[in-house]
Image 1 (tube, rainbow, N blue to C red):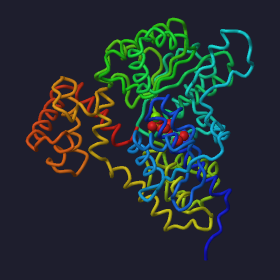
Image 2: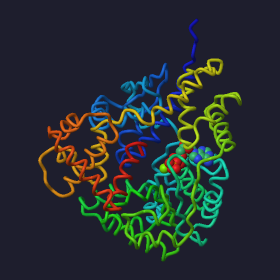
Image 3: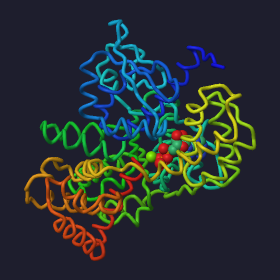
Image 4: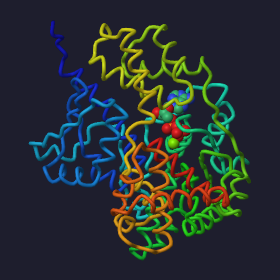
Length: 467
Ligand code: ADP
Ligand code: MG
């Protein structure tokens, strides 16, 4: 018998799923790109793992398809699983165009009390905070106790505690981004006049490069130096980027001297950030370093309960326990599992059965390792080194291009099942001996040079985890 699913439900589900997609996309593209191309997309409905979204015009579709095809596919795979599909509809009503679908993503902060005061005007900038990350929905557990307490202390009195910088580290999907954004969100709600900005060190680098190209490095640097609270996520991505590190060092010093709050996150503690300038590492240790450990079983259950409630699905304890038992080390995966269940069950609690829960948990576990393409590897490597993807395929012998090419070949061999011949073909038709040579050189460099190892590990993390 066919189940009647209301329009309201399919819209609600589409909204949840698209929100999840956006949060993944947001971490992978510069904010200008995100604002321009992704924010205007509106979810319409989710039916049978097909997500329909509305875009302003057909040019949009072409552009997204041309530039973000891999990212979109990967995101949809991650959120909806292999059978997930995205369909674009073109907006009919012109006036709809700027009407963002959800108040949860107000990227541009409106200056509420519009005064004549010019100083006030300049404060209306993009703070890049996602209002969904708060302390209220951050579940406390043994693994995050110190980090959470320090984060709360800092947001109550930014710049006034000895936790400056506050440096939070831990594995992927354990809540670093959530926690440091919660700091930002609490501060902007408690202190109307404090300027807060959040961004990942990746985006910081991209913006810096743009500033160099447009001759606005001074403005760029002064902008960050004028903040009351600077929150930088995933600082490990500054590894290997000397110029960006230098600039960041100056910004850090200025802010610290002025007693402004700095909050940083990383996948490892400062002392293990090999390849990062020593003077930065030492400064990162000036304040408080706190780690986040994987959640224990009870915390995982609490997180699942909290998230399923906010998604509007109710799951029996038995199901919650099964999920918590099988997904252990990554909260993003716990959450992903719920989103998938929601999509799979389309969307009636009565559809929820043990088979479905089991299947979904299994899907989550296998998604981790499949579908990494050579082109995607090349893209991430090139982004890291800031070299043009095509140069890597051409016969370019510039030092950084050669290194990028060799590392991309090395990782393609490590992370895909492709033959040496196939890998060679993807890199401008080079033969298999070139690939072996590249593999061996990188292998040797890794064992001889810790900073190369660090760089390769960092890129590998980015590729495997899509972060
Ligand atoms: P990280 O930055 O460490 O990779 P995130 O902060 O992105 O991890 O967390 C992954 C997901 O898990 C996010 O959606 C976040 O809201 C959620 N999450 C992480 N820790 C908690 C927690 N303690 N309570 C509730 N949700 C959490
Ligand atoms: Mg993060």
